[in-house]
Image 1 (cartoon, rainbow, N blue to C red):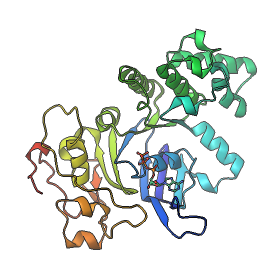
Image 2: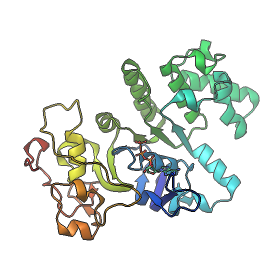
Image 3: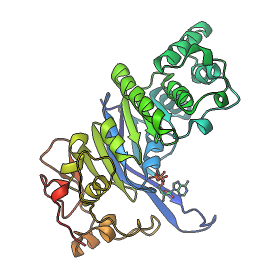
Length: 332
Ligand SMILES: Nc1ncnc2c1ncn2[C@@H]1O[C@H](COP(=O)(O)OP(=O)(O)OP(=O)(O)O)[C@@H](O)[C@H]1O
């Protein structure tokens, strides 16, 4: 059974600045279908504003969908009674945010921050909760000496370790990490990423990993999801994403990423991302796509399954399956 399953999820907000009676709406997430299996890591890539954080918040039950369903281990989250939902969310998922210095209560010492979810969910006796706090600290490599320290006394890397430990406190099946290393120094990033990889292996976690750093997403994930203007446009096995993604947007994103193993010619990704309030008709990527034609303006294509397993994309004019990125035609 899947750790979490989204079916036809839409999230629509009143546009910022539109005022209380404004009619403008932002389609932050449109018709999202996604399943994350136990033990699997799904990476999410896409430019700023494409809906990555919205997807993350829907997955951990912070954001209620405008329509569609979110199921934890087969049970619809938003049809549960509020108390039951709080238990399901609290015990079933953990979220790691970008900036631990704002995500952690700076007035509480580490020990209390980690005990808090155990107290709220009444896990075990007081002594067992203290044992669990020690266990969590050792799991994420925090020295015992910091148990009584306030977050402000810790380094950025240590704070993120506390945030990870807190996300794991109730032994969740799913952890969602939204830009977990982007606020950290480069030297500390690798340590935190290795910690997450290690925890995933040891605890068999399902993980959703959201980042602007798409090379890191590829390294961390089994499967990569590409989002564009609130829509999932492709799902690719991570090993294939650089050379075998078929959606032009995914290939353009990866071709533009620094740190590829070999040089790849940049693929044109010109012009701004269109407005999420008034998205283009048909395929939302068509205004920046070098392959777009009239058909793309009329209809958003359905998902097509590629021959490779676990690979699907929404594009009227997909790239050739085995065309390496460095041999893509140079088009204006
Ligand atoms: N509470 C809100 N009210 C109005 N609009 C919102 C709200 N939350 C998100 N949006 C809009 O929804 C869209 C998706 O936002 P989201 O934060 O999910 O994108 P993102 O891909 O995570 O962006 P970033 O990478 O910059 O964090 C954006 O256009 C954003 O401005």
